[in-house]
Length: 251
Image (cartoon, rainbow, N blue to C red):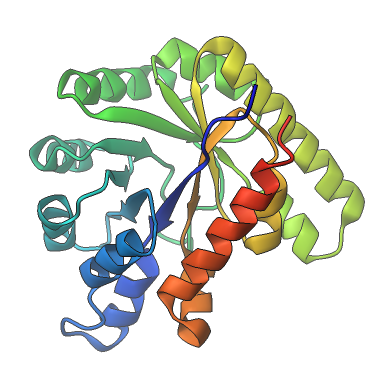
């Protein structure tokens, strides 16, 4: 039995980061989303942060209005963000941790400590027809908490694995990938759809694509960096090829 198709979600936050560095309207993250879809992206991810450091409220509204593929609204589990998500009605909301001091999301949600609040937010979004995903560490405790919370989807944080590879820490990289492999298998056992993301590049996407339980990768910073040199369609084509190559070895 072949592994399911591996979807690619493209995060456009960093296009907005470049725009906001100078102010004004360019480069337009919505244009990047449309180009990514034309080049083969299966969905678009955007993180509306509390401080609006990159994506803005009007970006989310335009994305919902203008793109033809699913919109994944990354957000903290706050009353303000829940209200915006309920108004926007994206295809999905991925609940992520958020700290003002961080450059980017640095780890998974504390789904054990924040269980009760996350359960309330998850239920509210689900009632509105929004698919809820929890961005979690690849641990069995986090997966069991996600099931108790009622989330139909989890996204495994791959940052520790990718960082270990980048720093040449082969033993740590093997350990972290082992955690991802076990967590992905556990998600399938629990009936939870499993996604993965953070820090992925061509090589790591190719490797993780071989885990058949993972059905979606969300990638942003690396793709936008590559796009500076080769253009977004070419960067996406190479990523798609790497994912497809890895998927052929799934099992």
